[in-house]
Image 1 (cartoon, helix red, strand yellow):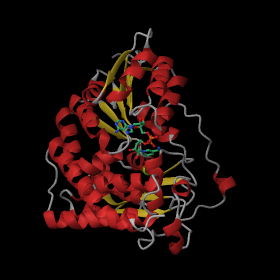
Image 2: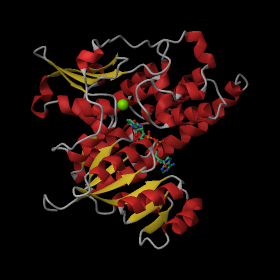
Image 3: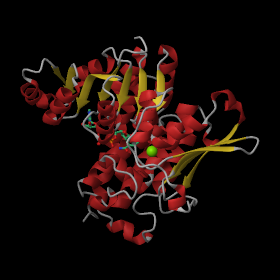
Image 4: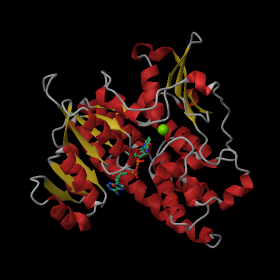
Length: 396
Ligand code: NAD
Ligand code: MG
């Protein structure tokens, strides 16, 4: 590809919050990017609309039951339709310069890993990949030469603040956290927190799963594990600072006392634009930061009593092995049940803790292959389902 030819981009999870923001940015600079493959879980009509609008060549639904609808919706467009896990992997490995990995959860493992193995530049939003199989992903990237660019705002901030020539001089890497919608709720009230309250994030507009993760602060725990793998930073050099305004996204502290941070309004189009254009930059139509209007920024320590999920994730990062794989899978099950109103908010971290305890007994090791990771993931989901009935009795 010459520098003037449009860059080809595939978007896994195109119908989601990150996927739509990515397409919005790409649509503003059509000379610069062309869309190759787009995927969704099962919303065939929405996917077909996006594929047509952006001139994609291939559209894939993960759910085979949605294939007929997709074919019908794409009729006459010349866009190829696919469905199921193999088609998802094919979408991820079609020749494209950059692959936006924005499927939510461990469902993104196989296609994202396939894109890494092909050596594409990966714009990684799907943090669950690195949580569930971080060493595997980073090794695969080293082997294929794939470049992994973070999309998560905190990791984008760290990537921008971290001077690659100075890695030996890094003392500390800090991720900021908004504290989510329940930061100031009395702890007893959390028992009655409803899904619609949990997904109403004060600063960011995001998909349902990550919004609940932000409310439990599991999201920040997943992000610590993500940062640990992405930047090869030891767990003891990583920490979290609660920053309710979500303006400073991350800090890198160096041995000479210097601290480098990245600031921007909380709008995912800024880190997405960065990942799309890096090492260049493109325009993002986001509100501009006005520090004088904000007046002040505040910071506080995270409350691990109120947010046990963060404590559990830190524990899983420190213990290594398959603990993070287990944590991630149990959390996905628990968050889904909470979103369906079948368990209470505090049960989410309780279920994760119960499953992690069983993992310590059975000792799942670090996944060495995709099959390993998927097997540990499946085991943890089964255990989560087994520990749930006792919690269901207490549900509203
Ligand atoms: P979302 O729920 O809005 O979108 C998820 C996308 O994945 C959709 O396109 C959906 O169709 C697809 N999908 C869901 N289940 C699938 C399955 N089983 N198989 C294949 N595809 C499936 O989620 P989102 O908020 O866009 O988040 C996507 C990822 O990016 C998550 O891992 C999240 O943690 C991460 N992330 C999101 C934000 C944000 O602001 N939304 C910020 C940082 C990181
Ligand atoms: Mg984040």
